[in-house]
Image (cartoon, rainbow, N blue to C red; front, side, top):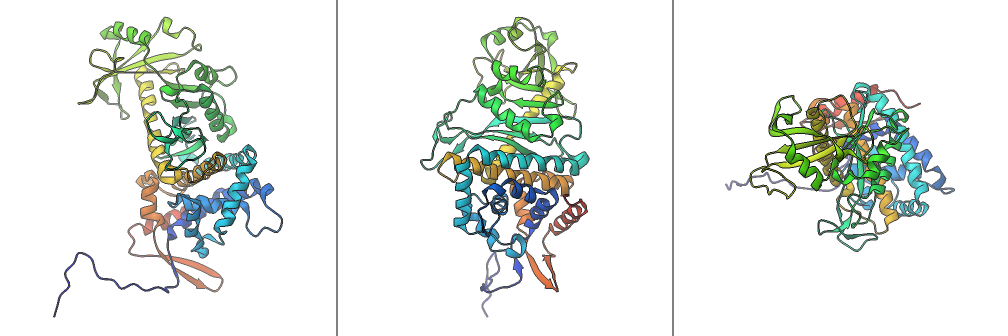
Length: 458
């Protein structure tokens, strides 16, 4: 008798299985759409683009693409994954129908984009109300991070151009609402730009900030309770003046380029003026100090601006720049927040690095490349990506707890969305029986139970 030796069991495969649903965990996103009213809002917004006697609602078609992207798709054709599971996702339009809708919306230009963005803003207000103390504005303040993203193009697409990193593609400017250490974040702005767009173009930062503010509830669209953070690309006179303009009065924390004047002032700061930088837990940050610059450096800038500089020992092997001093890495930022210590404000600005996590999640959710050729089409694609990221932020905020709420899209797909289930039909009811041996079945069922307790949209 021969005994087979191998690392994996030998399994015979056959087609023709029935009653089995793949991507069954996707019902979490479907229920999130129902409870937030996103399906109704998008359907109403796109009603002007529905043709007479059309079989498929444009809002449903667009949301099907959104779900496909949220589940890991990166092109329009990936909607076929949903088409294979009508019991969970309902009837799904054909690939040509999906493509025609994208072309139609792209031809409408800003009118279609504005309709979609308005619907997203309305739904966002409802989601934050449902989330209560887990909403990003629970502490009375909203933080918006602006940052540029390089999207590589592997073919000749409209507005694709060489980038500042010697690559080829596009350079969108995006904005994300920070959910803080207990959550992730959600996109609120996406400005598609050519690959050779400047990093510190003030007009682009102003437009991205406008788009971001329009996504927030009305009370956060002006006033000190809204904080705009960005790196040194936003450290221009025009952008800072726009943020601090009378009647807008936004809070800001903006990185600044180390100029020769700032460099000379840093060299003159006495040792007694430096205070230790701190970490998020309150402990002292080893090898880092902060100080506030005053004097003629603030001339020409908006009233009330503070200029805070940090020096830190560079990591082993890191190369110093010409603007560094005494073997220390020098960074600087500006803020208009008064009455708080420099070290506390420097920590707040440093936490802007969480935007890099949001960008990583966006790359894993349809932003690895822009799949369409025309710029107008890819603007619609960016709206699809943003709605998918909204769902991937809203679902954990409303339904998950503990560490599971911090899971990024790839982990959500691997552990929750990819779960298989058996479809059972009894009378007029359809029941999904998730695999009992799946390690994260309990997380899925508990999340669905929390979503079920939420009120239905009126």
